[in-house]
Image (cartoon, rainbow, N blue to C red; front, side):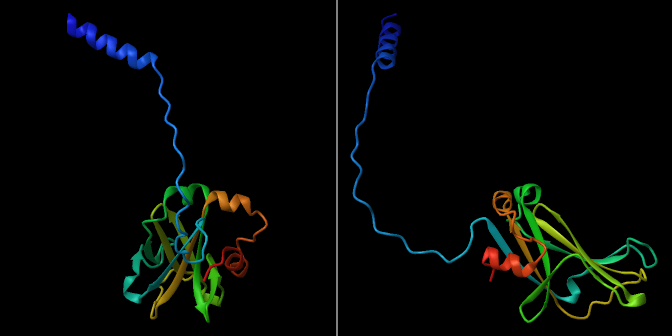
Length: 173
């Protein structure tokens, strides 16, 4: 019984007493090393896809027939996909990029290049109007740019469909 009363007395004393700690801030530390230029609200990834990385989906003659590749991006979380903006560009030479989707009209060999975005990956598809298997004989370069929802909403004046404007606004290299 004495132990119970002692524990109760200690708890009540702690409960009804108040302590304040007064501290004096120390001196300012030295400045840290500057990081690389950039924007914390924007992520960029580059991919070079060799012909052997493409897989075939569906059968020739059917509307779902295409070549596709999965671009794995562990940092591309659901926040970017659900609330932000994910843009995919095809390298078109000379440091220039063309936003997807692309329709290249040339008669019976009309080509569509488009993408699907989901958390942690981007799927890029190439499909022909003839529904035949696309022949991929060279590397394709892709750039994926993800913008946080906060940044996108804070800058409604940016034309997100114009790569040059996006590049300038986001300081993309």
